[in-house]
Length: 211
Ligand SMILES: N[C@@H](CCC(=O)N[C@@H](CS)C(=O)NCC(=O)O)C(=O)O
Image (spheres, rainbow, N blue to C red):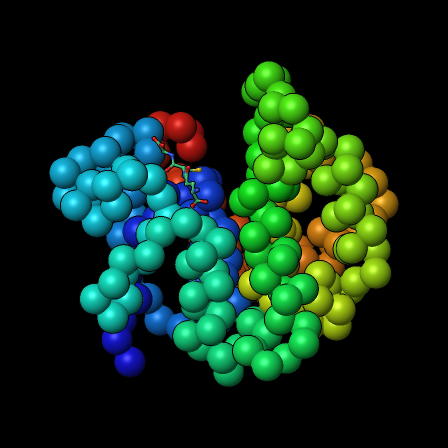
């Protein structure tokens, strides 16, 4: 199997891919970077991702960026973990919908709220309005236990990471639907491993900040 190289800065969006890799349990080589140190803007990394952003993975000679795309790719590439819904399964459309809803609706609604960004008119905005995004998502996770019914998928890694971050930033409302969804996700051993490893890696990269 061709080795995955994971270009990762802990405590950033690349935690999403870190969790995904822990769920898969596949080996990977870590290219640990510090955003604070500006590693992601150095020529060596710009040659990998001209956007100068994390996460990225390199696999089979190809570099893939965009957290949700990486999760979708990995889920398809390692089907034994059953984190994807395969082509031909009627639930695949639902799975893809939530994978794309993460960056295009949930994340945008959270960022607009955190930064108090002037809102685009609802018909031009990628998500419409904040309350509708939260209500739509709350209804979906309430049906649960996961976004594609009984199967935990890469879509839960993407959306769960967004809900976790948005809640921390007070840009996702405290609702019982989200609380019990997050409780289910946090109970997963891979999520717990990922959290602990990222804390440790962050402290290793930033000894002063940790002290
Ligand atoms: N659309 C990208 C966003 C990636 C992104 O913005 N990553 C942030 C970390 S949370 C980053 O690299 N920021 C550093 C910078 O832009 O200077 C994705 O979903 O992967």
